Image (cartoon, rainbow, N blue to C red; front, side, top):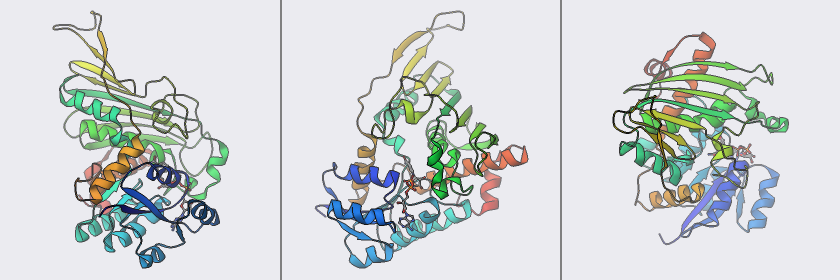
Length: 356
Ligand SMILES: NC(=O)c1ccc[n+]([C@@H]2O[C@H](COP(=O)([O-])OP(=O)(O)OC[C@H]3O[C@@H](n4cnc5c(N)ncnc54)[C@H](O)[C@@H]3O)[C@@H](O)[C@H]2O)c1
Protein backbone atom coordinates (compact mmCIF):
# COMPACT_ATOMS: atom_id res chain seq x y z
CA UNK A 1 0.00 0.00 0.00
CA UNK A 2 1.75 3.19 -1.11
CA UNK A 3 -0.81 5.73 0.01
CA UNK A 4 -3.46 4.94 2.63
CA UNK A 5 -6.91 6.07 1.46
CA UNK A 6 -8.87 7.32 4.47
CA UNK A 7 -12.56 8.13 4.86
CA UNK A 8 -13.94 10.22 7.72
CA UNK A 9 -17.39 9.34 9.05
CA UNK A 10 -18.97 12.37 10.77
CA UNK A 11 -17.82 15.84 9.76
CA UNK A 12 -18.73 17.81 12.88
CA UNK A 13 -16.32 19.44 15.30
CA UNK A 14 -13.79 16.66 15.68
CA UNK A 15 -14.37 15.15 12.21
CA UNK A 16 -13.13 18.44 10.76
CA UNK A 17 -10.05 18.32 12.99
CA UNK A 18 -9.29 14.86 11.55
CA UNK A 19 -9.93 16.14 8.02
CA UNK A 20 -7.51 19.06 8.54
CA UNK A 21 -5.00 16.70 10.13
CA UNK A 22 -5.09 14.31 7.19
CA UNK A 23 -4.05 17.13 4.87
CA UNK A 24 -0.69 17.26 6.67
CA UNK A 25 0.18 13.58 7.09
CA UNK A 26 2.39 12.14 4.34
CA UNK A 27 1.31 8.74 3.02
CA UNK A 28 -2.34 9.23 3.96
CA UNK A 29 -5.00 10.81 1.76
CA UNK A 30 -8.62 11.72 2.48
CA UNK A 31 -10.80 10.16 -0.22
CA UNK A 32 -14.32 10.51 1.19
CA UNK A 33 -16.55 11.72 3.97
CA UNK A 34 -19.72 10.03 5.19
CA UNK A 35 -22.33 12.25 6.82
CA UNK A 36 -26.06 12.68 6.20
CA UNK A 37 -25.94 16.45 6.79
CA UNK A 38 -26.26 18.79 3.78
CA UNK A 39 -23.28 20.81 5.05
CA UNK A 40 -21.01 17.80 4.65
CA UNK A 41 -21.92 17.57 0.96
CA UNK A 42 -20.63 21.12 0.46
CA UNK A 43 -17.56 20.29 2.52
CA UNK A 44 -16.78 17.30 0.28
CA UNK A 45 -17.34 19.36 -2.86
CA UNK A 46 -14.93 22.00 -1.55
CA UNK A 47 -12.33 19.33 -0.81
CA UNK A 48 -12.98 17.61 -4.15
CA UNK A 49 -13.55 14.25 -2.51
CA UNK A 50 -16.46 11.81 -2.57
CA UNK A 51 -19.45 12.31 -0.29
CA UNK A 52 -21.70 9.54 1.02
CA UNK A 53 -24.65 9.63 3.35
CA UNK A 54 -24.20 6.06 4.59
CA UNK A 55 -21.35 3.69 5.37
CA UNK A 56 -23.00 1.13 3.03
CA UNK A 57 -22.37 3.49 0.12
CA UNK A 58 -18.79 4.10 1.22
CA UNK A 59 -18.13 0.36 1.33
CA UNK A 60 -19.69 -0.20 -2.12
CA UNK A 61 -17.38 2.44 -3.60
CA UNK A 62 -14.27 0.64 -2.27
CA UNK A 63 -12.25 3.83 -1.96
CA UNK A 64 -11.04 3.54 1.63
CA UNK A 65 -8.31 1.43 3.24
CA UNK A 66 -9.04 2.81 6.71
CA UNK A 67 -11.74 4.90 8.36
CA UNK A 68 -11.93 7.56 11.07
CA UNK A 69 -15.26 7.33 12.92
CA UNK A 70 -16.18 10.75 14.35
CA UNK A 71 -19.97 10.54 14.33
CA UNK A 72 -22.13 10.74 17.51
CA UNK A 73 -21.59 8.18 20.25
CA UNK A 74 -24.68 6.09 19.50
CA UNK A 75 -23.32 5.33 16.01
CA UNK A 76 -19.88 4.13 17.19
CA UNK A 77 -20.74 0.47 17.71
CA UNK A 78 -22.98 -0.14 14.66
CA UNK A 79 -20.65 1.77 12.32
CA UNK A 80 -17.50 0.46 13.97
CA UNK A 81 -18.66 -3.17 13.71
CA UNK A 82 -19.73 -2.71 10.09
CA UNK A 83 -16.31 -1.33 9.14
CA UNK A 84 -14.40 -4.01 11.02
CA UNK A 85 -16.52 -6.72 9.37
CA UNK A 86 -15.64 -5.14 6.02
CA UNK A 87 -11.96 -5.57 6.88
CA UNK A 88 -11.16 -1.93 7.55
CA UNK A 89 -9.03 -0.65 10.47
CA UNK A 90 -10.68 2.17 12.39
CA UNK A 91 -9.69 5.20 14.41
CA UNK A 92 -12.80 5.38 16.60
CA UNK A 93 -13.63 8.47 18.59
CA UNK A 94 -14.34 8.12 22.29
CA UNK A 95 -16.45 6.94 23.99
CA UNK A 96 -16.28 3.63 22.15
CA UNK A 97 -19.99 2.90 22.69
CA UNK A 98 -23.25 4.20 24.01
CA UNK A 99 -23.37 1.61 26.80
CA UNK A 100 -21.09 -0.97 28.36
CA UNK A 101 -23.28 -3.82 27.06
CA UNK A 102 -22.94 -2.42 23.55
CA UNK A 103 -19.17 -2.04 23.92
CA UNK A 104 -18.90 -5.83 24.22
CA UNK A 105 -20.21 -6.12 20.63
CA UNK A 106 -17.39 -3.92 19.41
CA UNK A 107 -14.78 -5.91 21.33
CA UNK A 108 -16.23 -9.12 19.85
CA UNK A 109 -16.12 -7.72 16.29
CA UNK A 110 -12.51 -6.61 16.77
CA UNK A 111 -11.54 -10.04 18.13
CA UNK A 112 -13.41 -11.92 15.37
CA UNK A 113 -12.08 -9.89 12.45
CA UNK A 114 -8.61 -9.20 13.81
CA UNK A 115 -8.98 -5.65 12.52
CA UNK A 116 -7.31 -2.99 14.66
CA UNK A 117 -9.24 -0.37 16.61
CA UNK A 118 -7.41 2.78 17.72
CA UNK A 119 -9.55 4.74 20.18
CA UNK A 120 -9.33 8.55 19.91
CA UNK A 121 -7.90 9.32 23.33
CA UNK A 122 -5.54 11.61 21.48
CA UNK A 123 -3.75 12.98 24.56
CA UNK A 124 -1.70 9.80 24.82
CA UNK A 125 0.03 10.81 21.57
CA UNK A 126 1.06 14.17 23.04
CA UNK A 127 4.86 14.27 23.56
CA UNK A 128 4.11 15.98 26.87
CA UNK A 129 2.23 12.92 28.10
CA UNK A 130 4.93 10.61 26.74
CA UNK A 131 7.54 12.63 28.67
CA UNK A 132 5.42 12.44 31.85
CA UNK A 133 4.95 8.70 31.46
CA UNK A 134 8.71 8.18 30.95
CA UNK A 135 9.48 10.32 34.01
CA UNK A 136 7.04 8.34 36.15
CA UNK A 137 8.40 5.01 34.87
CA UNK A 138 11.96 6.20 35.53
CA UNK A 139 10.98 6.83 39.16
CA UNK A 140 11.12 10.63 39.00
CA UNK A 141 8.55 10.88 41.82
CA UNK A 142 8.75 7.34 43.21
CA UNK A 143 5.64 5.19 43.69
CA UNK A 144 2.48 7.18 42.93
CA UNK A 145 0.40 8.05 45.99
CA UNK A 146 -2.24 10.52 44.81
CA UNK A 147 -3.40 12.70 41.97
CA UNK A 148 -5.86 15.48 41.52
CA UNK A 149 -7.35 16.53 38.20
CA UNK A 150 -9.36 19.66 37.46
CA UNK A 151 -11.51 20.47 34.47
CA UNK A 152 -13.35 23.82 34.71
CA UNK A 153 -14.64 25.21 31.41
CA UNK A 154 -17.52 27.48 30.50
CA UNK A 155 -19.26 26.08 27.42
CA UNK A 156 -21.54 28.52 25.58
CA UNK A 157 -25.29 27.90 25.82
CA UNK A 158 -25.61 27.14 22.08
CA UNK A 159 -23.13 24.25 22.49
CA UNK A 160 -26.13 22.38 23.90
CA UNK A 161 -28.32 23.01 20.83
CA UNK A 162 -26.87 19.77 19.39
CA UNK A 163 -29.32 17.14 20.63
CA UNK A 164 -26.88 14.34 21.55
CA UNK A 165 -24.92 16.64 23.89
CA UNK A 166 -27.88 16.79 26.30
CA UNK A 167 -28.79 13.11 26.04
CA UNK A 168 -27.78 11.46 29.36
CA UNK A 169 -26.73 8.33 27.44
CA UNK A 170 -24.38 10.26 25.17
CA UNK A 171 -23.60 13.74 26.44
CA UNK A 172 -22.37 15.49 29.57
CA UNK A 173 -18.83 16.54 30.43
CA UNK A 174 -18.00 13.19 32.06
CA UNK A 175 -18.34 11.38 28.73
CA UNK A 176 -17.21 14.27 26.56
CA UNK A 177 -14.26 15.66 28.56
CA UNK A 178 -13.40 13.79 31.75
CA UNK A 179 -13.12 10.45 29.95
CA UNK A 180 -9.82 11.74 28.52
CA UNK A 181 -8.59 12.60 32.04
CA UNK A 182 -9.66 9.14 33.21
CA UNK A 183 -7.67 7.63 30.34
CA UNK A 184 -4.58 9.51 31.52
CA UNK A 185 -5.11 8.49 35.15
CA UNK A 186 -5.36 4.84 34.05
CA UNK A 187 -2.28 5.32 31.86
CA UNK A 188 -0.26 6.47 34.88
CA UNK A 189 -1.81 4.54 37.81
CA UNK A 190 -3.14 1.38 36.15
CA UNK A 191 -6.69 0.05 36.44
CA UNK A 192 -9.36 1.63 38.63
CA UNK A 193 -10.82 -0.63 41.32
CA UNK A 194 -13.63 1.55 42.69
CA UNK A 195 -15.14 5.01 42.42
CA UNK A 196 -17.28 7.30 44.51
CA UNK A 197 -18.91 10.21 42.73
CA UNK A 198 -21.33 13.06 43.04
CA UNK A 199 -22.82 14.67 39.91
CA UNK A 200 -25.11 17.67 39.66
CA UNK A 201 -27.09 19.43 36.92
CA UNK A 202 -28.08 22.31 39.21
CA UNK A 203 -26.40 25.09 37.20
CA UNK A 204 -27.77 24.45 33.72
CA UNK A 205 -30.76 22.26 34.65
CA UNK A 206 -30.16 20.06 31.61
CA UNK A 207 -30.75 16.27 31.59
CA UNK A 208 -26.95 15.81 31.67
CA UNK A 209 -24.66 16.69 34.58
CA UNK A 210 -22.79 20.00 34.46
CA UNK A 211 -20.61 19.48 37.54
CA UNK A 212 -19.08 16.37 39.08
CA UNK A 213 -16.60 15.40 41.77
CA UNK A 214 -15.23 11.87 41.99
CA UNK A 215 -12.73 9.80 43.93
CA UNK A 216 -10.94 6.97 42.13
CA UNK A 217 -9.25 4.10 43.98
CA UNK A 218 -6.71 2.20 41.88
CA UNK A 219 -6.18 -1.56 41.89
CA UNK A 220 -2.44 -1.44 42.61
CA UNK A 221 -2.14 1.65 44.81
CA UNK A 222 -3.14 5.27 44.91
CA UNK A 223 -6.13 7.58 45.05
CA UNK A 224 -7.17 10.35 42.68
CA UNK A 225 -9.82 13.03 42.62
CA UNK A 226 -11.47 14.62 39.62
CA UNK A 227 -13.37 17.94 39.88
CA UNK A 228 -15.18 18.79 36.68
CA UNK A 229 -17.61 21.43 35.43
CA UNK A 230 -18.57 22.74 32.01
CA UNK A 231 -20.57 25.55 33.61
CA UNK A 232 -17.78 27.17 35.63
CA UNK A 233 -15.07 29.57 34.53
CA UNK A 234 -11.47 28.59 34.85
CA UNK A 235 -8.36 27.94 32.85
CA UNK A 236 -7.86 24.75 34.91
CA UNK A 237 -8.76 22.31 32.17
CA UNK A 238 -6.56 20.32 29.82
CA UNK A 239 -8.35 21.78 26.81
CA UNK A 240 -7.50 25.32 27.96
CA UNK A 241 -3.97 24.80 29.18
CA UNK A 242 -2.25 22.15 27.07
CA UNK A 243 -2.28 24.02 23.76
CA UNK A 244 -3.25 20.74 22.13
CA UNK A 245 -5.93 22.14 19.83
CA UNK A 246 -4.99 25.78 19.10
CA UNK A 247 -7.58 25.97 16.32
CA UNK A 248 -10.35 25.53 18.88
CA UNK A 249 -9.05 26.65 22.27
CA UNK A 250 -6.69 29.36 23.54
CA UNK A 251 -3.81 28.20 25.73
CA UNK A 252 -3.46 29.44 29.32
CA UNK A 253 -0.67 29.09 31.82
CA UNK A 254 -2.48 26.83 34.31
CA UNK A 255 -1.96 23.47 35.97
CA UNK A 256 -4.68 20.84 35.60
CA UNK A 257 -3.14 17.54 36.75
CA UNK A 258 -1.10 17.04 39.94
CA UNK A 259 0.66 13.74 40.60
CA UNK A 260 2.29 13.18 43.98
CA UNK A 261 4.56 10.24 44.72
CA UNK A 262 6.69 9.06 47.64
CA UNK A 263 9.79 10.83 46.32
CA UNK A 264 8.44 13.80 44.38
CA UNK A 265 5.63 15.53 42.58
CA UNK A 266 4.81 16.25 38.94
CA UNK A 267 2.24 18.65 37.55
CA UNK A 268 0.79 18.87 34.03
CA UNK A 269 0.78 20.31 31.52
CA UNK A 270 3.77 22.36 32.72
CA UNK A 271 5.77 19.19 33.58
CA UNK A 272 7.01 20.81 36.79
CA UNK A 273 8.96 18.38 38.91
CA UNK A 274 9.39 18.79 42.68
CA UNK A 275 11.66 16.72 44.92
CA UNK A 276 13.23 16.70 48.36
CA UNK A 277 16.85 15.84 48.76
CA UNK A 278 17.69 12.68 50.70
CA UNK A 279 15.96 12.69 54.09
CA UNK A 280 13.90 15.77 53.16
CA UNK A 281 10.35 16.35 54.31
CA UNK A 282 7.83 19.21 54.55
CA UNK A 283 10.18 21.27 56.75
CA UNK A 284 12.70 21.51 53.87
CA UNK A 285 12.48 23.55 50.68
CA UNK A 286 11.74 21.45 47.63
CA UNK A 287 13.93 21.43 44.52
CA UNK A 288 12.17 22.41 41.36
CA UNK A 289 12.87 21.35 37.78
CA UNK A 290 11.03 20.79 34.53
CA UNK A 291 10.87 17.56 32.56
CA UNK A 292 12.06 18.38 29.02
CA UNK A 293 9.98 17.64 25.95
CA UNK A 294 9.43 18.99 22.45
CA UNK A 295 5.85 19.86 21.55
CA UNK A 296 4.45 18.56 18.29
CA UNK A 297 0.84 18.36 17.09
CA UNK A 298 -1.03 15.67 19.01
CA UNK A 299 -3.67 15.00 16.35
CA UNK A 300 -0.98 14.62 13.67
CA UNK A 301 0.92 12.21 15.93
CA UNK A 302 -2.30 10.23 16.45
CA UNK A 303 -2.99 10.09 12.70
CA UNK A 304 0.61 9.08 11.90
CA UNK A 305 0.28 6.30 14.47
CA UNK A 306 -2.99 5.19 12.84
CA UNK A 307 -1.13 5.05 9.52
CA UNK A 308 1.52 2.83 11.08
CA UNK A 309 -1.22 0.55 12.42
CA UNK A 310 -2.87 0.30 8.99
CA UNK A 311 0.51 -0.63 7.48
CA UNK A 312 0.89 -3.35 10.12
CA UNK A 313 3.90 -1.62 11.68
CA UNK A 314 2.37 -0.73 15.07
CA UNK A 315 -0.21 -1.93 17.56
CA UNK A 316 -2.83 0.57 18.79
CA UNK A 317 -1.47 2.72 21.61
CA UNK A 318 -5.05 3.13 22.89
CA UNK A 319 -6.96 -0.10 22.44
CA UNK A 320 -10.64 -1.01 22.34
CA UNK A 321 -10.15 -2.44 25.84
CA UNK A 322 -8.77 0.92 27.03
CA UNK A 323 -11.83 2.62 25.58
CA UNK A 324 -14.13 0.23 27.42
CA UNK A 325 -12.23 0.55 30.72
CA UNK A 326 -12.50 4.35 30.50
CA UNK A 327 -16.23 4.07 29.88
CA UNK A 328 -16.62 1.76 32.85
CA UNK A 329 -15.17 4.43 35.12
CA UNK A 330 -17.56 7.07 33.73
CA UNK A 331 -20.56 4.77 34.14
CA UNK A 332 -19.44 3.92 37.69
CA UNK A 333 -19.17 7.62 38.63
CA UNK A 334 -22.70 8.18 37.32
CA UNK A 335 -24.05 5.15 39.20
CA UNK A 336 -22.31 6.20 42.39
CA UNK A 337 -23.82 9.67 42.05
CA UNK A 338 -27.30 8.17 41.82
CA UNK A 339 -26.95 5.63 44.61
CA UNK A 340 -24.63 7.52 46.95
CA UNK A 341 -22.52 4.37 47.22
CA UNK A 342 -19.01 3.48 46.08
CA UNK A 343 -19.05 1.33 42.94
CA UNK A 344 -16.63 -1.55 42.38
CA UNK A 345 -15.64 -1.55 38.73
CA UNK A 346 -15.52 -5.36 38.52
CA UNK A 347 -19.15 -5.63 39.70
CA UNK A 348 -20.25 -3.01 37.21
CA UNK A 349 -18.57 -4.71 34.27
CA UNK A 350 -20.09 -8.07 35.22
CA UNK A 351 -23.60 -6.68 35.48
CA UNK A 352 -23.36 -4.88 32.14
CA UNK A 353 -21.94 -7.78 30.15
CA UNK A 354 -18.90 -5.71 29.20
CA UNK A 355 -15.82 -7.50 27.92
CA UNK A 356 -13.23 -8.08 30.67
N1 LIG B 1 -11.08 13.22 20.81
C1 LIG B 1 -11.55 14.44 20.86
O1 LIG B 1 -10.81 15.40 21.08
C2 LIG B 1 -13.02 14.68 20.63
C3 LIG B 1 -13.48 15.99 20.61
C4 LIG B 1 -14.85 16.21 20.32
C5 LIG B 1 -15.68 15.14 20.10
N2 LIG B 1 -15.20 13.86 20.18
C6 LIG B 1 -16.09 12.71 19.92
O2 LIG B 1 -16.34 12.70 18.52
C7 LIG B 1 -17.70 12.37 18.25
C8 LIG B 1 -18.34 13.51 17.47
O3 LIG B 1 -18.32 14.67 18.28
P1 LIG B 1 -18.52 16.13 17.64
O4 LIG B 1 -18.42 17.09 18.76
O5 LIG B 1 -17.62 16.27 16.46
O6 LIG B 1 -20.04 16.02 17.17
P2 LIG B 1 -20.84 16.94 16.15
O7 LIG B 1 -22.25 16.87 16.57
O8 LIG B 1 -20.15 18.25 16.01
O9 LIG B 1 -20.65 16.17 14.74
C9 LIG B 1 -21.18 14.90 14.48
C10 LIG B 1 -21.33 14.75 12.98
O10 LIG B 1 -21.73 13.41 12.71
C11 LIG B 1 -22.76 13.44 11.73
N3 LIG B 1 -23.55 12.21 11.82
C12 LIG B 1 -24.66 11.96 12.56
N4 LIG B 1 -25.08 10.69 12.36
C13 LIG B 1 -24.22 10.15 11.45
C14 LIG B 1 -24.14 8.88 10.84
N5 LIG B 1 -25.01 7.90 11.12
N6 LIG B 1 -23.14 8.66 9.96
C15 LIG B 1 -22.24 9.64 9.67
N7 LIG B 1 -22.26 10.86 10.23
C16 LIG B 1 -23.24 11.11 11.12
C17 LIG B 1 -23.54 14.71 12.02
O11 LIG B 1 -24.28 15.14 10.89
C18 LIG B 1 -22.41 15.66 12.38
O12 LIG B 1 -21.89 16.32 11.25
C19 LIG B 1 -18.35 12.11 19.60
O13 LIG B 1 -18.32 10.73 19.84
C20 LIG B 1 -17.45 12.84 20.59
O14 LIG B 1 -17.45 12.24 21.86
C21 LIG B 1 -13.88 13.62 20.40
